[in-house]
Length: 229
Ligand SMILES: C[S@@+](CC[C@H](N)C(=O)[O-])C[C@H]1O[C@@H](n2cnc3c(N)ncnc32)[C@H](O)[C@@H]1O
Image (tube, rainbow, N blue to C red; front, side, top):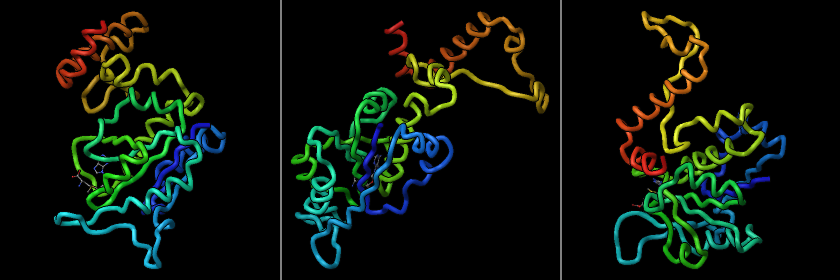
């Protein structure tokens, strides 16, 4: 069973969106599990201090290495388990990385304030992962995005596992446009080819659409696609 352990100062935010629908059903079927650890429980003083001012000056506070280290050390028994710190400075999260971490249990630290003491990242062999080129106020939303992406890749979670094969980023292509009933809506028709019943033609049209949208919107993916093709 794939397990995600989340270390956070705001455990009440979880499971949030991960506690409904298919995520909940998949947890009940024991396809995955979520463990949420309140970092504050590992504070060393009676005031439950988890952050402090920066050496060298500067505005804001930093999460203390000793408190988070204690939370990690007391909850992770397997030293080889991956520990991820969500950080805008990290390696960019993507579908390829999601597929990689789906094969192992993971630990995720959600930062706050100005982030976390560098020494924690170095001593615990923590990898930094970013969910995009923007700055959130905390790592929790990122943790949910990361876990959401991985959970839907686990066989048995989605009703139709095959639908994953056609999705955006498979083969470095964005997904083609899709339509459902009614056939005509606000004077707009569904493309004729989709009503033709000719599966080869539909497949070809979808590929053309995927290629065209990828070329226009994501030249970076388009280059990768062309190379592999
Ligand atoms: C206000 S941010 C800290 C930003 C940090 N001072 C910097 O400039 O890199 C607080 C926390 O939000 C989370 N966070 C913010 N942006 C993120 C992103 N793009 N990806 C992942 N986590 C992010 C991190 O856990 C971070 O420690």
